[in-house]
Structures are given as structure tokens and as C-alpha cells.
Length: 345
Image (cartoon, rainbow, N blue to C red):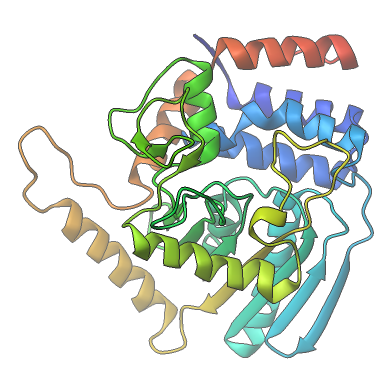
């Protein structure tokens, strides 16, 4: 498996998006979002989506030249009409707007509507925490979660992300689907003929399986509790914004790329100094993280808190490069041929 430097992938993906007609500022943030996600080891939501994102702009699902509108109905609430552009870009825009509001009012809630797939929520959440803020974010997705006690689906993977700043290290960041894995992770494994040891998928009859070839839906984390969290996210996104809900959301990969999905994201931005000062908050969170890591591990195991695996991956991949599967390499070759943009290895 080839490994390519982060800087080379960033340049290549930016140029591909530009050639796809995407506005420069948007292309810069989206390419960074994809590459940053890959370097953190979340390959399912990383650079493997570049060809899909390019096609989405060319065929009309994503608006490469949007006219974004921002409204402030209340001092601590903002809504952003994303005009169907890239979710990565709208996420960063929402967080930046939220930071301005939270700086003044202590807390901000930002809802983005008329959006598209926003990739890994960690990208925008960590952006907030590196500026010293707590961020909690949500987004919904097409119907892929097996409904509790049913053979049918309604909600998507509907992820939740929470991040907070720490001292002298990367922010704490929990970025999780409300299903055991994401659908993109399942698809990535399926293309590599890799099954799951645990039965975290369901077949057409709702029976549990680890076989990716039989998978028709995903299992919620914690049974009915995960299903309830998925519904909470749908309320915070689809219901709150008036966007598509559940089965009305067109599937990301199987619906025509000229069909707009009408997605939403919601972001809560919170100052860290509302109760104690920011310095004490950051110091306390860093201390807690270290105390957890220093507990006695089981034999052969390491104790980690959320974001530790991603931080480790980023260090290794910055040094050695980002692994590129044969499937992604073929994507890059098609894109190079189409746009006359070549990856400088």
C-alpha cells in the first residue's frame, strides 16, 4: 500500500476541487477537511471521498459557488442557509460565527440548513477547541440505522461530536456515530473484502451479521439507548431546521448526484470560563486525561481517552505518509486523467 505525504495530498485535492469549479476558499477548507480526517486515521471520511465530492459539484448536488445567508433571530442563536454547498465549509463557517457569539454571550447555538455531507464532525469541532472553546455538534444522515425491535430503518448514523481544549496537547474530542460504525466504514471494508468479527451489521431480515456483503443496515450503540440518541440528533438537525428527515433523505452514494439532500448540522459553542477561569478549566481537563491514562491497564492493553488514537495516527502519518488503498489510487488516476492534475509523490 502506497503512502503519500499530507502536503502532497492537500495540494492534489485542492487542485481537483478547483478544477471541479469549486470556489477557492471552499476548495481550501474542504481539501483540508478531507486530508486532516485521513491523517487522523478516520479513512472512511477522508480522502477516499474526493472523487465523490468532485462529481457532486459537477453534477449539481453540491453548489460550488453558493450565496450563503446568515441570520440572527436571537442574540445566542444563529441560522445559516448554506445554499447546498460543501458541509465542511459550512461547519467551519458555523463554528467561527458561533465563537463570535459565544465570546459576547457565553454560549451560541448555530444551525446550518440547505447543507450537504459535512465529513467528520471532529474537523470543525477541534477548530473551535483550538481557539479555546467547548464545541458540541450534530448531523443527520440517510436511513441506515436498524430501528429498535424492527427489520426496517429510519434514522441514519446520526453522529455526535464533543470537543474541549487541553493544555499542551491536542483537544479532547469524542466523535462518534450513534451506530457501532459509520456506513462509510462498512463500505470501505466491503470493498477490501474485510468482514467484522462482531455482529454490528444487519441483513435484509434484520438479523445480526458481521458479513459486509450481507449488510443492509447498521446496529445502534447500546440498543434502544443508541436509537434514542439517533432520534435526538434528528430532532436537533432535521426537525429543528425543517430539512429532510429519516427516509426522506436521499442516500449519499446511490441517489443521483443531481439530487440535493437537504441536510442540516447543529453546533453548540460554549465559553470555558463561565464558571471557573479558562486557565483552570484547561489545566483540570489535562490533569483528568493524564490520571485516566495512568490507571493500571489490563494485560496487553493501553488506556486511552477519546482522540488519543487519532493523535497517535496523526503523528505517525505526518512522518510516514497517509496510506492509499488500491481503490483510492484508481480514483486518483481517473481524476488526474480527467482534469490534467497530477499527484506529486
